[in-house]
Each structure stands twice: as C-alpha cells, then as structure tokens.
Image 1 (spheres, one colour):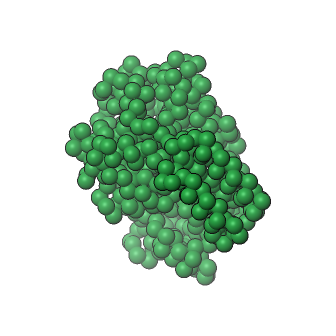
Image 2 (tube, one colour):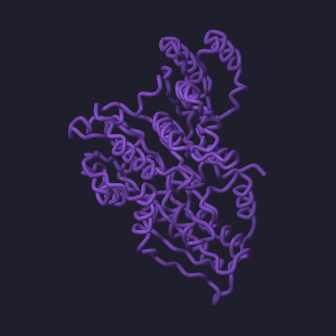
Image 3 (cartoon, helix red, strand yellow):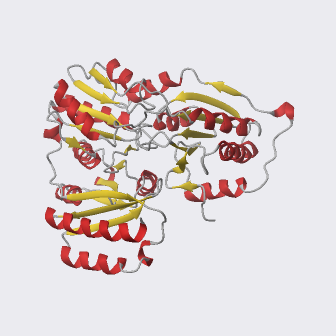
Length: 446
C-alpha cells in the first residue's frame, strides 16, 4: 500500500492544514490504539513535543484518540526526539509519538511514531496504520477509556541516560557555546553539559512558540561559528528544533558537519576495537572525501538513501554501530535507536578531553571535495527522469566529471522542495553544473 500521509520522516506539513490537523492526529491516535490495545494488555504510549505553538493542539488530539481506545498515555511536554525514543524503550511502552517538524520553521509541524523497541516504524507498518485510518475506528466502552498522565520526571530520566553514554566523564575546563534553536532541548541540553562540568554559554534558549529554528539552530551554523569566536570558546554545538541533529564549530569559527564527526568517531572506535566489521553507514549526501579517508584507514563505508531511518535500517541489517548524515543526524547504535544530537555532542567533547586536542585537530583526517548544495521551492513533484531533457543533462554532467564528481538531485521528503547537490574535485566544475541544474529545474518545476 502506498503511503499518503507518512513521508520520509513521519507526517509533516503546515500546521492546521492537511495532513497536520487535529482531525488527522485524533485518527492517528485511534489507529495506534486499535493496533496496540488489541495486541497488548495495558497498552501504553509516550508523547513528546518540541516548542511549537501548534504542539498543544496536536498533543491534545493524539491523546484523545489514544485514550478513546483504552490506551494509557504519558505526556512529557517539550522533549528531544531521541529522549522519546529512549523513554519508550526504558518504560517498556507500546509506542511513542514525537510532535515536531524538526528543523522546519514554526508554521510547520509533524508527527513521528516509534515502535516499542524505540525505532521509527518501517514503511510497511506506516502503510498499515494509514490503512486502519482510512476506515472507521470505534472507541471502547465508557468504563474502559484510558487515562493520560504527565510524566514529571522525563527530563531527569533522559539526563542521566545521556551522561551515562560517556561514563559521566568530566568536561571541566571546556568552554562551550550551545545553540538550542529555541527548541526541545532548551533546558535539557545546557543542564547536561553543566552537570558534567563544562562552562556553557547557552544561546537560543527562550522559546515562545514561534521562534523555533528562526535564524538559529543546525540549519544556521553561521550563528554558532560567530558566537564561538565572540566568546573565545573551545567549541560550538548547535542543535535543531528537536535535537536529533547537531552541527559543530571549531575554536576558529569553522563549521564542522556530520561527515567529519562520523569520521573522527569511526577512527577512535576502530582504535579501541569498538567498530564492528570496521564499517560505517552514511547517505548518498556524504562527501566523497569521507569515503576516501575511511578507505585509507581500512574502514568500509555503506551508502544508503537520504534519511536517518534508512541509515539505521542498514546499520541494523549489517551489524554496524556508527552511522549518520552530513546534515548532523549521528547514530551511535550502541546507545540510541535514533539520531541524538546531545549524545553525539557528548562523545565529541569526551574525545576532546581525553585526547587533549581541539576539534580542528581531530577532524583534519579528510580533505573534502568541493560541494555546491541548495534547493528550490517547487509547485509539483513529477518524477525527475520524466522531465524532458533531464536525463540528457545528467549524462552530460557525468561525462564531464569523468569519475571525479557527481550530481544528486532529489525531492525533499518533508518539504515542497527539490534539493540539488553537485560535487567535484574541481570546485569551478561543481559550481558550473550546479548553476546549470538550478536553471533547468527552475524552468521545469518552479
């Protein structure tokens, strides 16, 4: 069954417009209730959200749908996405739901669903949920309606878990600038770093419901790069709205993306004999320079489609413990079941302390191919290969790259955008072909 509501990362769109409406949320809650109440005695769910104003609306509707089927619901309030994944597993809940549009602006929202194992649901299960939602879902008798509770100690549970992933190593002596994107981590991330002894300059920690990701967070790394230099910090850490992504800045104000972090962690894990099969998993968006650098150190790189869920699926299939995306979704499967920006940051800070090195020293193991990356808002999303002239343009680019470059053109799974990546050893060549594809796609789709 083809999915119509779920995309590459849950249900996503503009809040209060289809499919991100209270009606859909209510129906989704009822569908989850029908699945889990029928299969488990005392079915329970954990619901978290980021700081968007529309989160209250969706949380209430989801909860109503679940309790109408007899489920017990635990609400955490604002909480990072990876915290919900952790709580679902640690509390032995039937499922978890995170209300967030991640790095998108406040006008958007979305719903991510986790299974009882803490992992995002596979495509076929999401399709099954949609099938149930398309029919009539009856509630239970009045004396069997479920209950909703506020999980008051949710923050404390996740704080202790996150610190334990690095063995509560002291971060004393590190000055850290932390950008929380006015999102779900605005309280929890500074608390974790301070409890471990770091000096923390916290930025974008005053959410008002509409300023999430606004000129801050992982999609605006220039902010953290500027603040690191301004405060003469050792490192900058910038999270996105739901804290499942992280981008860094070194002490010189240079951006350090997910590719370099995955690489430096892979080298450390290999050195400690903690990298199974000497293999990592990344997406097609990762820089070819990372693949080359890993190969030089005897590390195999598995390549997946875009989306942290597909990285995780490959990791589970191949027994890989480290993977992620250039955009900052980093997965340490020994500890977490999804991308976790806070846990990732803690591992980097731990390495800086243990090796007594600055971040730029740790990430100098690779030379990046020049990349030109951008996107265009589109009115429609026809298959790219069916656009007249598209295949010919790709063939011409490939011929000129002669194996030393590539193009990755794809539609966003969460926004009405087409994303363009052109990468080549010759930066001028990458720019040339980016311009050509941008011009072509503007005419065809915009």
